Length: 422
Image (cartoon, rainbow, N blue to C red; front, side, top):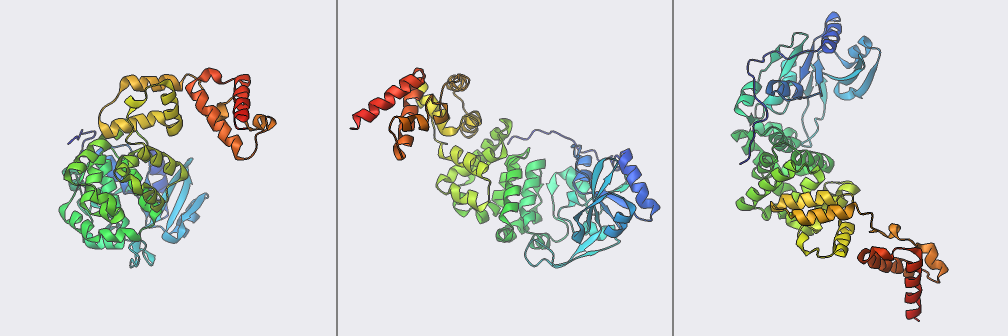
């Protein structure tokens, strides 16, 4: 399996590197009798050695305290204790230490209460690697759940009772797979067991959040790890049972290889999802509706899946190539070529060069490129549906022979067609 080490764990880094802005910000909290910490992903990625410009902060100060301390704040999620502080030209999302009430819907707590205890706040989080905090301004890293050791072991492990974590919030099942894809980490055994046993609860999560996690998983640096976790946890079969039935151990191996090639070819995330969905082309529309995909994503994925069996060698003539470009869309045909290369592991360089040459030729490939339009046809006696039919017919002629695209030639062809129908 492909796995290139792109970062290293430095276990001697027990202090987070604190910049001047964060030091000054934390000193304001300290003067008012409060503490401030960097928490979550920023601490994790610092220990790993990955860049992360998204710094989340946590504090024992209440939202009202923060609003008194700073002139400019935004009530980002005041109900849940989150205030965005505008300081030195930057935005700092800061959340009061909190405790979550009971989770009644496998996603949201029925209540939120604030606490003065950082340990209680860290204990409610999802995975050990995300439950570390760095005290400000010292930068001393607080790791009460073995996050640093799990980074060293390259594993994702739920905090405490894994079943409870996933029953609290079923989205964490997908988040585990997404982190696996992002970091190239395995899922710890008990955590994976709990994911399997809780997989059906994913269906209670909003479809928009499911889509967000899946697209991010597809875009990870280690998509083979992510899809393996998604499959092994039964999350894939819970979400798309018919698609999952089409994937066995051999096709799973192929899928992982295809996603790695899609990553290397830098396909956008929607195209990477097409790499997954082309295995069940007849249901792709249902999958895209289920995920609440945008019109753009639906169009791209459906087009790629519907044409996934195309053979570029069958494009014998220039006209064939122009029709192909028209069918796929000139704005995405080059990415489609990379999509085909990702799912087949081979390329036809000569044919791809012909397609690129045609793209830059300026030859007409759309009705809007024709030298005459609907108004011209009305003057020639066309009306209703026959206008569109004639324009489509003219386009087909022009795609085959671009030299026909002049007002005089197309007018003559339109008149001849009109006379022949009488």
